[in-house]
Length: 385
Image 1 (tube, rainbow, N blue to C red):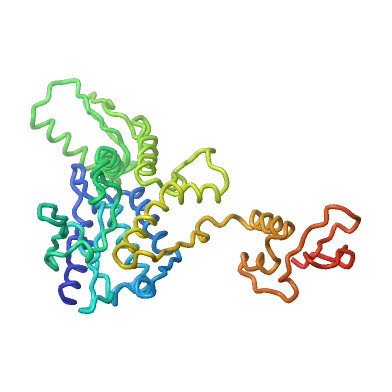
Image 2: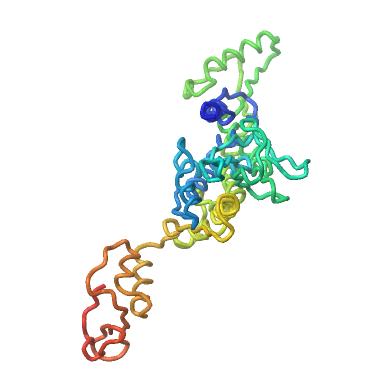
């Protein structure tokens, strides 16, 4: 089993050699894997998958939590979650076989190739068909899905939005060809006389040898016999390639729900603070993938009354000035102790700061009062936080 899994992982359909092939003049065939060629797609799917993988999370069931933290001897929990989420973002589905002992105890999660796994609905009960392990029952497959119309099978965003992706691919190919030719527009060499086909061919070959390509940039063009140059195509600036590529970045943002600024695109002045941007990313994108993971883990790995939690503080934590203002309000209102506020800042507790306090809005001292103590003894005392 281990030998077959290693073969599937390192020489399977998702091998890197599939991505790195020879470029041709035509637009490359668009597939979920080749979509990673394009930087906005690569940035979006790796950002989503890496954020899902790095978030701290736990399952209330000890056996499920143990498997969640160490799914396999081959991959870490981070790499397992990142690869599964990335596959779901590209293919629409990600699969991991749930390996159990004969007694039904959870043993490991074995990631499968999304292109060689299918869901068979023709029988009395749905089953998964795999090339590596044959037929698997629903309860034996961890299945992470992108949005789909029937809830059983996820649809690939790359295939659903093929038109937008193909436009981006055409733009990249156009830019590649233009810059390979040093960004020079297409021109015509016009001769005042009548030329034979052989003469025209010779002039064209001589021009290409001397002036085509980036290595010949800046070489002077010497014309004879009254010839002149006419431009018959526009430059990259004239075609609006820069604006078109910026629109493609916005398209990828719309497809995956990642804010444009997180794809290194220009977002204008519509966004507020980084905290607001992070919250928008979490609410519009990340939380949907977290719920997809949570529902599948609780359904397949845990018991009916178990729960799963995610800690989003590392993503949506505000700036230090905003944190200090909020914590000060909480301390002065009395629902946070000063040591609890320090804990929010990852600072160690200090002695004497475990009692809640209330700010004095009247009097000359303007200090704080410990709840449940004599106010007269606390007036004017300095704030230890």
